[in-house]
Image (cartoon, rainbow, N blue to C red; front, side, top):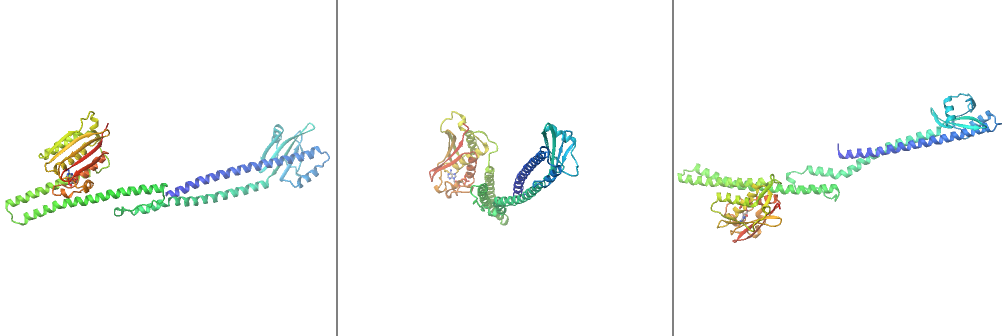
Length: 455
Ligand code: ADP
């Protein structure tokens, strides 16, 4: 069911039930008021008749009947009956003397002195009237035609009022809910047109600070992040395929040459050497691609306490194993009295990737293949700097080198894919840390990693 219909129904149910209760209470109060008023009239009628009949001895009963019937205040189906001490009918305002009242009622009146009751549609009042030591029971009964017709009128008005009000409430409910949810429907149609090709689409935030405006703003922010990561992935795919194409094209032409032309064994050997180089390049590239994809997750899976110096030494060992020509020295800037100063919560293999990349770059981009790693800490962070005396980085590239596949012009003669630093940045940020670089062309570079320690 649509929210608009739901709100309209709920709204109408609430207003409808309130109106129904209100109408019922009005009707009941009015009914009680009418009844009481009518009993009072009957009571005064009974007393008047009794006074005329019993007190004024001379009055003729037939004359009283005529007076009773013709007074302006005569009530519909009016009966006044007076009974003496022995419950014998002493006077009846009707000629036919039909008496519907049993002794029970008469005795009740004698006991309670005043009784209000009803008989079918007629209201009945019974009262005990005492004169000269004699107790008379007077019963006065009549039908409140005027009162009942007023009640019927009121009931009709309340019924039709209730029905009309409920109808109006339903219409208003639909209108207001539609009005309030209109922008949501607009969002739905806008959102349903968004595809991978138009991620630039934004929702209308004109609704300001209300919930709909906040929803639109939150959605737009999400779209912005989606667009960014989509763009990143697109450029990643295009760069990656470009990087893959070069060695594959070289492989293809090498294979074609060796198949098409009559070559000596030495020439074949040379071509196979080239093929091996290209295959190694492809393996290195796929390793880099794997590196970039792995930490793309938004959180670390297995965060454990990791000693940063251990990770640095492991990276050093691994690098020296594959590149024995590298010269890597590791030192502590100051002795950590508490190991928590150099322990962080994180993912050990990912952290090792960071230091392997940084140390490997330092050695790769310097003629002496030398890297100096310094481990330090402050109140909040463990600090690791990786310094070299290599080719340096042009100032305008100091930010760009952290983008995937970006390589400085002065580095193009040295093998690489421009992936390592972007991976390092991503991993450090996953650990809530920061990575900076300072560099001077021809003099060397210094990368500084700050990671929050557990103390
Ligand atoms: P790669 O080294 O494979 O090209 P990186 O992402 O590790 O990829 O580095 C990106 C770029 O940053 C390098 O191409 C190079 O231009 C520059 N760079 C990184 N480290 C250094 C360094 N220690 N000295 C000089 N340039 C560096």
